[in-house]
Image (cartoon, rainbow, N blue to C red; front, side, top):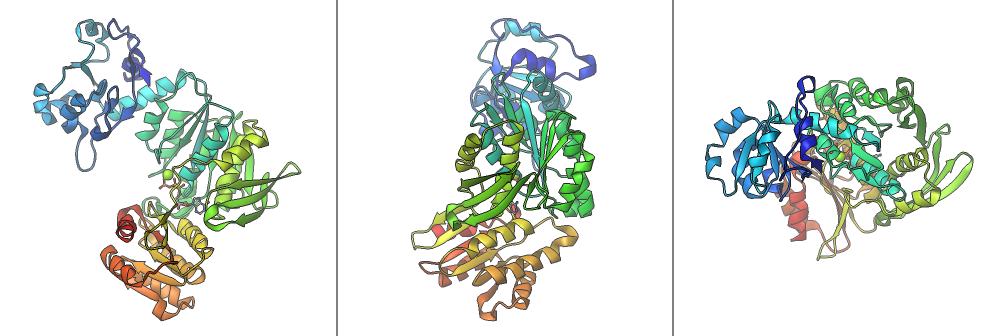
Length: 487
Ligand code: ATP
Ligand code: MG
């Protein structure tokens, strides 16, 4: 939530900002949350009209007004071009320049304020920077190729045991959703846990400039986004922008087992705390026991003392998620009781979901997204389940030059972990060949050109007691397979 006077001040370009005094009936008005999808507007929201690839938010302003938005950031030029029918909107509205706050005295309190700005996205970002500077929470930024959302959820679960915590919703990690999250800061928050994503070099530096984190966590560096960045070194450099942006009195929390991440220790002004299996890791895990779909138990050594911790996170790879959260708790001075309690109750937004179908089949639904590292981790979870283990794997997108190699790795891993491989989509052949080369019997490897043929095949072959792992990139919509099998 942001106060209207702060919003009208914050959206102005910094060099030419003019003071804002909001008269009654608008003084003290709180606006939020920020939304960019008109369908998510609820009474009181701040809508930001953005130009997307397919459409432009300005088109939906009549709906935004009707749904009760308190205000919207709009470009008046685009508004005139794209929302001519706004005049007939179901509710009063008023287009107002941020510097014209005195005029609000004559605007009915139930009206929707359309705040005229040059560029709604930049205005949102400026407002977020201004809003952020009014408060003094400890900000934790989290980046890495895989595990950002998982880590964000578990860090927030740990920290919120003792401190009032704001966290990014879902996978909100972009130059749109991170500022939107920042506008949710209030004086009450002691900590903000923010996911930071990356599409191009410079983006993490930009997000860090908005959020000004004191603590940075880098989970790992892998080939996700190789297509856009060109090389794994370029990806590592882009992730290193978070450590580089931290202050000297801050903390940089690094995965000691990923050499590219560990090397970032020399690139940060902040103090460094490392985690992992490596003997020199500051927060060291010595033993991980997996209870399959019931979670993991880990033994952690810190400053010579040993701690045993349980978490319902599924898969041994989540030892890293837990370690990052433990490290964050430690630098914030939390006691081990709080850390253990947080690990036992991680957030609900973790993606690997276990579904029991009515026909007695267990489905590990990890269809949100896929990269080689996370797919191999998920296969290792499948390996520990009872019954016939069937890996249903779709294409992993955006791997660029690592596309073939990535799918080969995954196919070979399937041969080690699953009884059956159902390879789906454009890379099915590559995955299947790698599985056969790794010794999987030919009658247990199937190639399906698309999701529909995979559904047909699975409907014929699955029986009660089977366990399926279904995973693929966001773009190949493997969730349609989960839905079809559940129906
Ligand atoms: P996105 O870039 O899509 O926002 P993310 O970085 O937020 O992804 P998560 O959503 O936390 O990543 O996890 C993505 C997948 O990777 C999940 O399947 C998760 O179980 C798996 N995963 C998480 N941490 C690790 C890890 N350390 N090693 C391997 N796999 C992991
Ligand atoms: Mg995420």
